[in-house]
Length: 402
Image 1 (cartoon, helix red, strand yellow):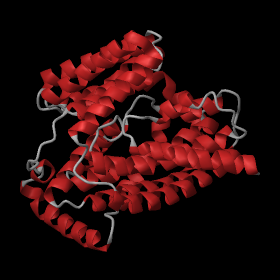
Image 2 (image 1 turned 90 degrees about the vertical axis):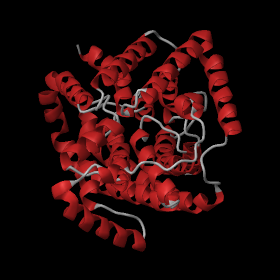
Image 3 (image 1 turned 180 degrees about the vertical axis):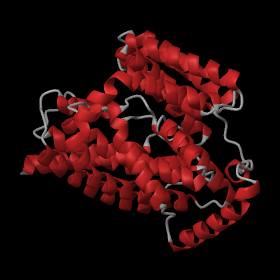
Image 4 (image 1 turned 90 degrees about the horizontal axis):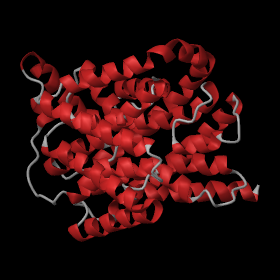
């Protein structure tokens, strides 16, 4: 019992690394491979669910983009610039994420019963579906040429980094594409264009006014909770287990386009719901697909097979951890300075990242990181959606299917 609690507590504390945007769950798993756990499963469950809530806090305070929150960062910046109420953004993300976890837990028995038959039907068409969604998203960009260039560059570095046996490849790829460009951006005090509200005009004007009035009432009571997005996000997150390489950002953009909703809090809500649901689906897939969709679950699957009762109990434990971590994150919000990271901290973070990469992957790793960072900066300069950087994961996945 003591060993179980010890590993569980260690995983919960390790979730605090979510406050460091460029450290991924996979990195923690790799760093702890030399540790002798009595109950690694409990450590992994506590780590994943705890870390997600602290990552929400880092998103709001530091505004550093990752592959999971690239879209939410734009919404957070707008809310911070317009009202300075980052606490409202954090509550929205935590509440919607936690509720999506609970909805996904209720959906899990259905996926457990029908997951394997669905997987057998979908497997032959998965590459087509992945590419179809990706190219559809690409052509919805205003500048299609720039979108194509960024997509091909991201896909190319993804294939090279992931298929050339570079140590610590996933950390290099994702940190280089997302975190390093964000750290290289200069702090600017400027008014962010309210592009979400300007996106809907004409016949939707009356509807938008009614929606905005409703949202204001919700905000005054606490977090902005959107049941529609919680349900949709839960369905997307659980179903995404069948479609590897679809990033939360890309899934969120696609869903909101079809829902015809344009508002920063909608993006925060749906993105958080998808992330919360994906945390559940990653562990659920261990049972209904016998696959590990993340670094933590892949490590769990190395030496074990899982049944429904075991995974269900893990999920209950994980959600309890997430609730506690969310409560702590809301309390910590007031003790962390606002306004993003200072230039000095950004420089220190960049030095730490490249030093870590050099130590674990050598010169080739540093070169690969620099190449990924150039692609990420190109995405920013070309003013196209960061969801296009998801081709760095999507293209290698499609190659594996083919």
